[in-house]
Length: 422
Figure 1 (spheres, helix red, strand yellow):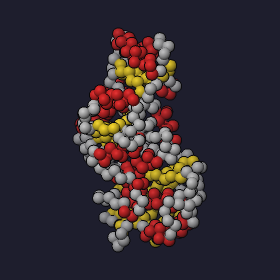
Figure 2: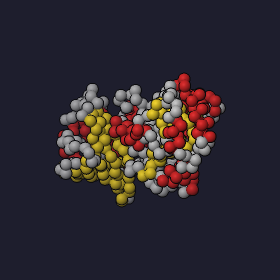
Figure 3: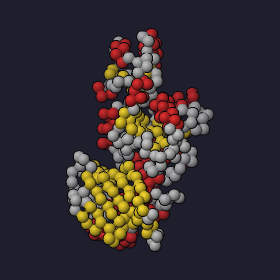
Figure 4: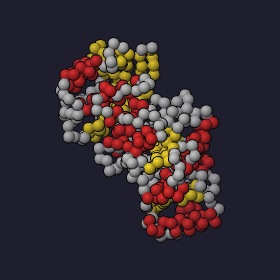
């Protein structure tokens, strides 16, 4: 909550499965497009919030499987748990708020009397959420009966059906929409209400996100029937909510452009990276481009020419140094010469690079310290190193900035690899 000194330029609040993450996209291209856009254009002054029905256990599993960025805030368990930052610090105030008129034991007792309901896995049973599977044709009648029984037992609950199979019972004060409203209230009290908020979803448990009056909303093109039905009945005339023509994360990018919330051209969509410029200076943008060129060289997606290598040398100081994760120190230009021999070695293979948690600090009138996590995904698995870069202005060249110093250390849990550049 305290990463930004003032209001966020944009806060994106997105569901994960089939919204931010396209499980039918084996290359994760739409997600990687979003990642490059976010880290190059928004991370420095905006907030990313994931709002998922997944429990913390299943959320962490997804994060290990897919090239997800680290959100500033994570809303989990259908809006009943809120955590902050990479360390996922819990919001205890939200947990206490949900305790009113909630008794988990009574919910389990009464719902167990319905043979149509089958409990989801133990990881999905949370302090303020009881989750089941139920057949679609039985859901509506069952929800009505169960709601009446629990009300008669003195509870005030909310029953949400989504995905054509998932049924969740929560406190009435819980849910994705209420969690978002709670966050917006906290931001407003701190004088940091985001200038714009974009909610993104695909299923019934996302409908509440679109019910907050002050937010923009996008239903991705692959939105499920229950969400489209809700929209037709409740928000079809609301110009702040659109049904995108693009799937998943690509639909989110589409919505950013539709509502005029900021840049919506991902660096990954630009063929000639030298033309990819920002209106406002951002050192992180330059590094996203640098590593995208690095990926394309490996994948043989740029021309193999001395010009490309010279461009890389122009944006690195001839006195620059790279400290490899192993601790070995090498001149930057020597690393580029070694890297040039790797052209096309990943062609036709899985190989993607993305940056996460890019942050920059001006340390001198002409120098910036930039920190980020540099990820690689290949057929051999995922690798990550914590990276610190010193950038200096170079006004005599079109590139404008040059890398002076690169220092990398392996993130815990990732084995050392020799063939690792920058």
